[in-house]
Image (tube, rainbow over all chains, first blue to last red; front, side):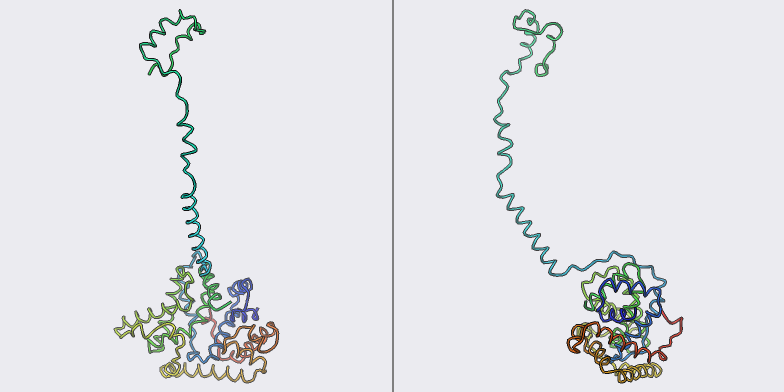
Length: 159
Length: 199
């Protein structure tokens, strides 16, 4: 485990190995002590002046009273991906505008047949004429409807 | 994987409620931060107070950290603001922003001044640690000493070290680990920390 810790300190451990080490650090105090010592060795070799400094314990103790952070981690989108996404969005916008501009208007194909629809051959009769026909229809030889059905008035004539 | 990506993994662990992962970041950057803050706050005890406050502020602000800059750059800005607020509260002059350009500050080394201002006990402790590490390094076999030097001093990747030393990456990994363990063993008596001081 310490070999992996040493590699992790050098950023030479793959992500899943790193997660395993981080999980182990929770319950292995010796592993945390090794991390501190390895860091101290590196700082010494790089001639860091303040080698007696060790704030980790005091900071972690102070944080015991702090609420635990539970935030949704926001992964940084690489700059290249951001540029590609912006370009794709621009192209999509141009394509939509172009398609709308170049395609024929929908009204020409859908409304025209309605405009050409034939008008009803028989115009609604006036109210006076309707009363006249009602009064004389029983005498009319052309009527094939007998009985009460002949008294049914059309909607168009009653309005 | 670079430092930035490795730190981002730790940051995301903290954002998911893992306080121990934050401890790793504190351990990693505390001396660098202390060195930088010592430019603003001269007294070493006060520097440590401001450094601790910086880490706590960083922890509180971490939910909003989106990784748009490196963790250390972000931490540095919090540290500078904390130091300026501290000095303002004490009625002392705060240096101008131009004096603390972050890129310039990263390469800053105020070692001698910090040693002068430190307490005799702390200076002695730092010297003992440095002597122990350097002596342990001298006693390492050549292949272990070269491997850890190329990594820690020259900042090379395992792949680059493997090419220089003409050996597999796995061997580099093993040599660096063995070198660290050998030096850590020599440091053990010095770092025998009381259980209540551990994290």
